[in-house]
Length: 217
Image (tube, rainbow, N blue to C red; front, side, top):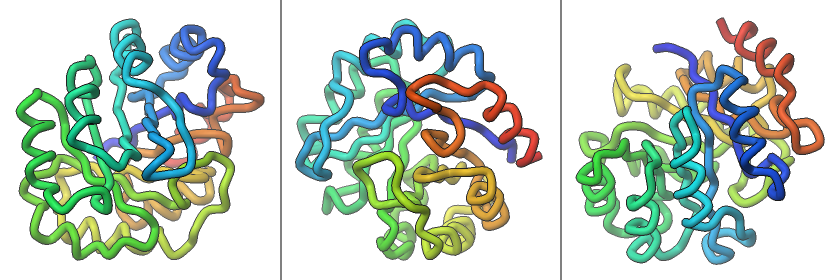
């Protein structure tokens, strides 16, 4: 499968998100990655629903939303009302994942499951037919700039065996070039880029992004 890049907009200057989206459009990335955190599921608060809606309206590249929230019942309708193209939520946030995966797909969007670093991949066995992609956290969710967890990468191989070859596996968390090459070896196809590659002092580094893509060919 084609290697795809997704730029983590939470690493951009929050006072200049319009400019950050324009920079992302010129980077050649396939997606803008929008983290929605509620201060409940994780101890951080990031983008709100109105911001996601406006970003999806003005962006010329797809916006994929990663929900790190505790209340999917209230969060999902808000996100599904935006123009985002992909929505993932954490398996740990619900006992009814199929319900929410179907809800996302019924809204015409790609549905993904996100796994924390220590979540068993066996969770996917019974829901693989209802999801479009899997997002693997390679750091603990909530904050940028954390250390890559080496134990998370080998799980990608097991996930690939479960979901097959035609669905994307996204990796998110300290995705440096070296870490990305390791994840790619195990079967990752989409790489969320933040402060490790894409953003320097809250602005995109286009050369680093080009070099990253070249290294993963």
